[in-house]
Amino acid sequence: MKYAIIAALFVFALAQGSLAQDASQDLAQVTQVLEDMKNKMTEEVNKLLQTDFSNQAQTWIESSKTQLEAMAPQMQEQMKGLMTTMEEQMKPLQAQMQPMMENLQKQMEGIFQKLTEQAQAIAN
Image (cartoon, rainbow, N blue to C red; front, side, top):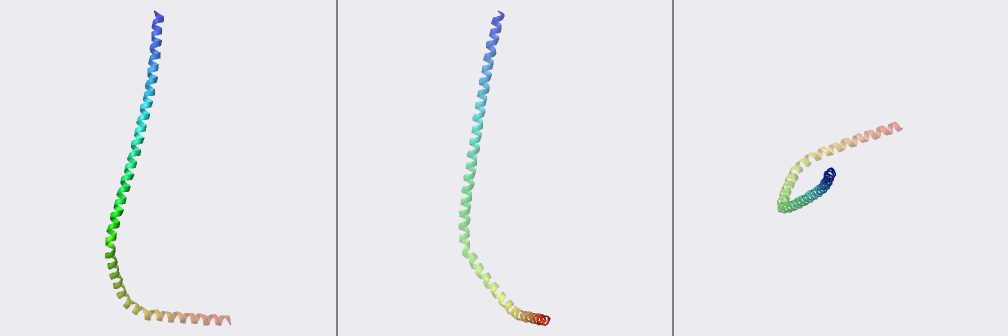
């Protein structure tokens, strides 16, 4: 009878170990499936975000381009008006600056002449 109990315990232990091993294999498979699902979902979400942002950016660029093209003639007219105003303001300033520039040029020529004379005097 002792041998029968020992044999029954041995068979029970083997069965329990076999079930435990099967459970750990099943757990590993379930873990792998969940990991694969997580990776696939992450990949799909990233693709969706990139596509969505790319489409939004393209739409925004096209919209902005259309708006800027519509504004270009207005801006060009404003710039022409601004350039005309600047030219009108610069003409009197240029007229005032011309005598001063001529005076500066004469003074610089005089200084250069004196330097040349002094250099010749030193050389002799």
